[in-house]
Length: 249
Image (cartoon, rainbow, N blue to C red; front, side, top):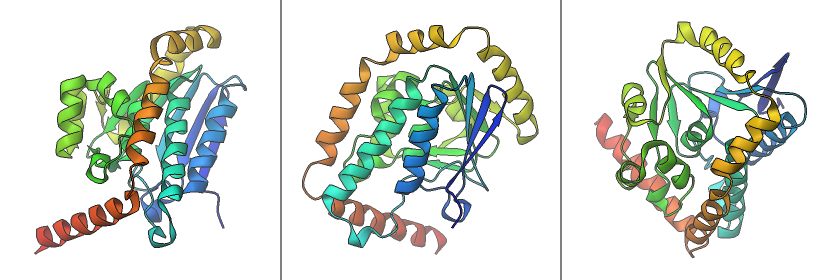
C-alpha cells in the first residue's frame, strides 16, 4: 500500500502532495494524520515555505465518506475534530503556507485551501463548502476571515460553487494563475517567505490568528456532536447523488 501523502523537501521549501488521486484526494483518517505530522514536523525543521498540492486532477474533494455504514456518530465526530486540528496547525504555523487549488476543491479540502497564507486558484479550479448541508461548522471562521462574514454566511448557507476568478474577487484565493505559471509563482513566494525569520512569522500568526482557534473548535464540536450526525451525512450524500443524476438526465 502506498503512503497517502508525499513529502518532498527542497532546501527550506517543503511540498506536501495529497496522493489519493483515484479518490479525489479525499481526506481519509491516515491522510489527515500524515498531514498533521508533516505540518508539525515543518514547524521544527527550518521550513520557510510549505506548499500543499494534490496528485492528479484535484487538490482535495473533501471528507472521505468511504465505509460510512460502519461508522458511528462518535467515529465521525473524532474524524472532523482531527481535521480541525490540521486546519489550526496550518493556520498558525511559524512559516508561510501556500495552497495550490486544482480541479475540485471541496468541503474540508476547501477549508485546507482557506487555512493557507497564499492560495493559488489554478485555471479551471472550483470551490465549495457543503459542510452545513449535513450540519457541521468546519472552517467557517477562517472562511469569514478571508471573505468577510456576510459573504461567508452566503457561501456556507447556499453551498454555491465558486470558480477560480470569483474565488480571487472574493478573497478566498490570492491569485488566479495558469498551470504553466505555478512553479514560477512558488519560487516567488519562497523568496518572499525568507524575508522574515521563523520566530517573527510565528509571532505574527499567533497574535493575529490564535485567539480564534478555541472558538472554531468549539463551534465545530457543538455542531458535530448534535445527535444524528451520521444520518445527516447519509441523507446529504443521497441528496447530492440524486441531484447529479438529475443533471445528467
